Length: 317
Image (cartoon, rainbow, N blue to C red; front, side, top):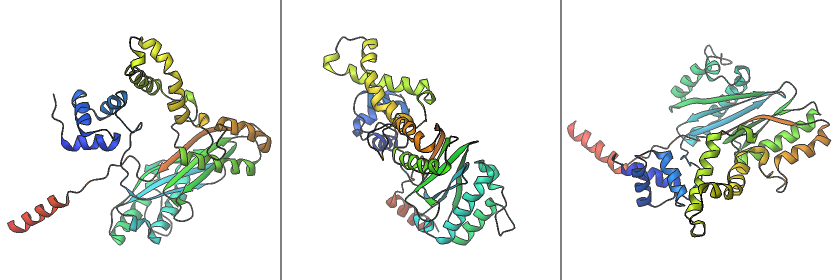
């Protein structure tokens, strides 16, 4: 059995809200596999978090830009929020976002793009900003959407300026309908996506593995209920389909979600009803949602250890 560190146990506890001993036992049973341990705690009903909750640490800004039939979104990170409020940094992110439209979401191409008003590229500009502002920065990721007919709408949440903020969303609508009506609909859908963070557009876009994983968790949870004692996995799987639809699919799939602005109809129903105003069928062909720092673990500093290390180094010097 592999040795489980206290830091790993704490990480699992932070992600699930389960007790320390339960986390330690889960990690031991899964040989330290974090994802498997999360699933195990969920199956036992001990996890208070159904989704992986990475601790957001990176600062900076997310930028979005759109030109009717195309749009781009980028994330530019800094070490502190203080730099994210710096007008020079904000202007740089806005410029890089505009350039991302031409790079079609290709990060390498974006970094190699000439930066306006300078002799160098976007990558060179980042290096210059690091030297000027005195803090590490990086263009972490970029994406783009486009349609042959219709619009690409955007939305920024927690805005710091034009097209920049903490969450950026693009949504592509394919339609031959009225552009003005499509843009209004697209903005509402982008706001909805910012609030609900769906995984995919359609049920068909969900992988079989993802569905099977959720179904297995619901079956294991059902097994733990006394009233289900002796029932076969097949019966429990059928009985769990309702939960699978309500708690997973209707939350993960955009078209199945209840539209937050309406609070009653699903997104699919909203699209259908919008056809009258738009004057043609409307189809969501894709979306991108960037939340600042998502998926980046925060490095936790042990202040006491840092002091001891500094004192030790000074003593040796």
